[in-house]
Image 1: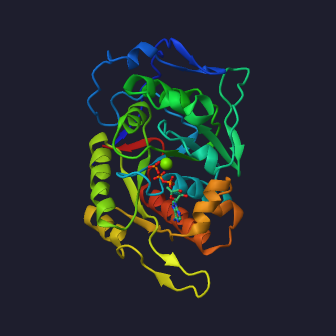
Image 2: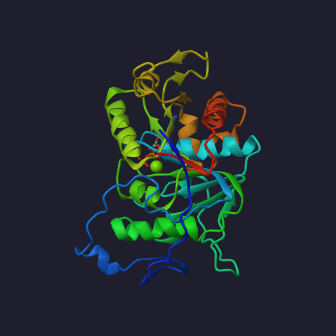
Amino acid sequence: MRFLKKGEKEKPKSQPSSTTKGHPELQVVSGAQISGQQPRQPTPQPQQQQQNITLPNIKYKIAVASGKGGVGKSTVATNLAISLASAGSAVGLLDADAYGPSIPTMMGIQEQPKTSPERKIIPLVRHDIKLMSIGFMVPEEQAMIWRGPMLHGAIRQLLGDVDWGELDYLIIDLPPGTGDVALSLTQALPLTGALIVTTPQDVALADVRRGVAMFERLGVPILGIIENMSYFLCPHCNEKTEIFRADGGKNTSERFGVAFLGQIPLDAEVCTAGDIGVPIVAGHPESPQSEAFGAVAKELGVVLEESGEEDELTIL
Ligand SMILES: Nc1ncnc2c1ncn2[C@@H]1O[C@H](COP(=O)(O)OP(=O)(O)OP(=O)(O)O)[C@@H](O)[C@H]1O
Ligand SMILES: [Mg+2]
């Protein structure tokens, strides 16, 4: 393992030929590129090779990923972001899930962001978090058919054309699996690292391996594994019931030699809070569920501090 300094300069942007509804600043590449004549998918490269967005005013750029869908990435990303902000950090949250952007719903905001005189997109602010989502910019059915080049252009613009300002953390919620968005993201920006969210069952854990392998291949450090829906905490007697397999995430993190950042209980309120747009950490900060998210946020801080990884360093 060795450390390298980043140093690539911004390359000129490709000329986009289509614009997003009501928001010409977020321009995406040619529509013809989704019509079967797509260039070959780029071969995954180590982080360093093609990146030219640096965001030096953001200390930690962290992707939230999973090998499997529906394990709670977006729930974890929103509540983790709010936990970090309530502990005093400046936090941005980028919903990079073109195929099912859920952050606007979970954060209770559906507006079109405005543009600054410098033609930068101004992120929306909710629960003290700066927010951007593909879902703010284009109708869902349009983004759903995007593939490689279209996604690549959109991801680059959500990173580079947004006025994120100074942040301690930019949390980036990815779609499930090991697809185009993760590839575009790692090609556009040097990430501090990735968090893998899983549930405790074997079927989900098998997919963790794929996620870990993908980030390793892309040269992105895994900052840790978060186990969601770990147990049910009875609201009446506080008894803990492990509905799925006990400690699956913890054992898996040991197997991969990555940090285990904590367990989040399965709880109807976590789900309802996301549906009504007030994540549990914002609505019920004193609840045991919020404490679990807070513990994960704290553990993440410890891992980052111990690894000494900041914007200037990338593990290859
Ligand atoms: N700890 C939890 N307790 C109860 N419900 C939860 C919990 N975590 C997530 N959920 C619910 O599970 C569903 C899926 O969660 P979420 O959308 O966060 O998953 P995801 O991994 O982002 O999904 P996708 O792969 O589709 O992006 C949502 O309805 C969410 O409210
Ligand atoms: Mg999601």
